[in-house]
Length: 487
Image 1 (tube, helix red, strand yellow):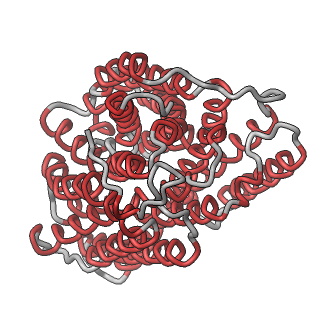
Image 2 (tube, rainbow, N blue to C red; image 1 turned 30 degrees about the horizontal axis):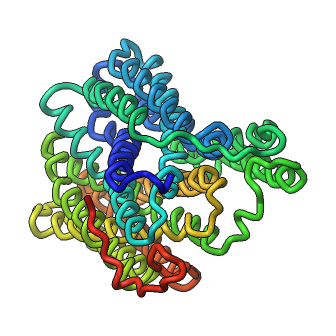
């Protein structure tokens, strides 16, 4: 792939990022539109959660399998297939006449999203081998991964406020068609490394079912109760299936996930950082939107507009700051600084009052979260992928995305549960509904701040990334002298 011209590589990057942005947006774009969807399609309060959960369930369950298919069949082929599935499912969601069909469409969206997300990162790593260009490219991709949540809330609020909830899905259709045609033209042809044996069907079935059962238990934990028989049995089943998967991979001649991958220090540490950070960030997007709506009384359009500062700052830090910091200081210092800024953002939101004002109580947290996420995601991704052989980059990409996905689902479920428990306690004590809601959000934001800070400590102490050097291994130019121009 690296013999492509600079212009061709960057065009391919933009196409990959646009495709992945569609996928990331759909994890948060529906949050602001849920009340309208409930009113139009007659969802019950408990069933409404499946508009989000159906997507998370299939997305999280099929990431590892999709990444491995990318290595075996070709990443370009899997990427295009995922885009087609996601686009068709978006049409079904936007035109869904019943709640059941909407949930089914969301599940298919998750399948397509898993295929796109699992191979996009590996394609980018193959396109950019020179350290400076790779840092810039990963900064761009990092904005898509981290900023997609904020852009999703913004776009969801604007489309729902100005048009209707149907457009949060239909907007994907022209984008998906454009991405498919562009990918066909600008992505390099697949260079699949011949491998002995066939796909590990047993391993694929075990890990896919294990992840789906685990996600199902996590996202349903708040409703059923974390100590209920259903939740404990499902979590236990998920653990047993994962244990069976590990046993299978240890003995398979052609394993789906070679266990030696987790023996790579930076891969394993990056997964821990990803789980902690994604849990805090997913909860921030969800709870911040609820605080603005239910405590401050913002309308859907106002909530979307309120997230503009986060999106702008995140874009600037991802595209113009993160790569320079990585090339000058390496991976660990920007990672620690970014996650610490994010932890500070969550800590500030944990102090937001009932009668909060946007400029003093919301905007500082929005700006800090944008800066922290924009700086931190690039080094997290570089650390996770830096030790992996090229022919296993699709699998490693799937592992990285799975850690973010599982961390996000677990963090959101746990922090929402903590928030709900605190709210119920305050209501029992005689607090008003708004004060009780705000008290619950404050506690959840505080726990999220602790998760982000712990991620900073784990990354800073345990990561041992390779030095960021120039493209010629025989010319050890210091990292801070490599300043490539972004086309």
